[in-house]
Amino acid sequence: MIENQSRQRRVIYNPAAADFQQNPFPSLRNLREYDPVHLTPQGWLLTRYSDCAEVLASRDFGMRGIEDVLRKQVGPGPAFEFIANRFHSLDPPEHTRLRSLAVTAFSARRIQEMRAHIEELAERLLDRVGPDTSFDLVETLAYPLPSAVIAEMLGTPMGERAQLNAWTERILKLQGSPRRDKLTLEEGNEAARDFMAYMRDFIETRRERRGTDLLTALIAAEEQGDRLTAEEIAECVVFLSNAGFSTTRNLIGSAAIALLTNRQQWESLVNDPSLIGEAVAEALRYDCSLTSTPRFARQQTIVGNRKLAPGAAVFCLLNAANRDPERFPDPDRFDIMRADKKHLAFGGGIHFCLGARLARLQIEIALSALVRRYPRLRLAGERIEWRAGLYRGPIGVPVVTR
Image (tube, rainbow, N blue to C red; front, side, top):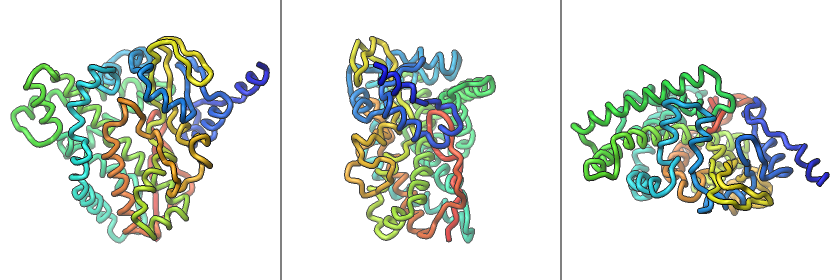
């Protein structure tokens, strides 16, 4: 008992701390080693791969309870209404009904059909670098590429991407703030209200001018019966717009940093570009964007050596699970030839990320273009500033080409 108390006293977990936001991995390792099923005022934190994988796949856990967590996190208002009602926050049968309407747009066949177009977009973006020998990788490629791709898929106007993305950033900042201040709360709620109002108006406009995009397909589904309401269409498109650009932007930036700070791995990819799939998989394991995903116990259950009451909130810390030495030997080493890369970067179970294939393809295309065009690419400085909150990623990645 004394030993257990001593072990738990050594746990340090403060996601609001500046050093955690810059580098969460030492704290996550400490948590996993000394109290892997850790109780906080918000709920239980899971850091082992086996525990996270089990909970994400288990029917003993669901999303009922997310409203209470969100209400405490963001307070009442437009942001709460939007986040609580998106299909990712729901359980079957509502989750199944809403997800099934969007899933065809993200099928393996549809994503592969987009490859040539995404490759062309990436090349055009890097062409803008011209003769410059330095640029910011996020500003030049990691941000505009997924922003353009998701806008085209959803059918939102390309010329209004900057505004839509600005709203997205404010919603995500509010959702991911460990300590929300008045300004963050006001801006997040205003962004959610304005984005939803914009989307409601845009849906009505698109009823008159159809296309081949996901928004048109959702409108058609609504008109064919009672499977979808206009409000659900708006919530679905805003959610996919939010998730579709910010997560992929972060993953492209993090993957580039991992490769460039492990020079031998970068050189391996330069010498053998066919290893790109291996590199992407390892980058996703090594440093993923979504830091935590919640579930709620449907009944009394056991996780690890802890008894969880019905309704207990459980947070799977994905970057901790993806560096669990019980699953991945020498997990803090970035190795594109690692044999087992079955990570949890996109979650698991019925809530597995809908856009995982699209994200992987965009990371692959972005890194392939960089490796081919700039084999001598390196970071321009030693310190990278990272985003705080629920979604981890570099704010900027300054690089030099020679």
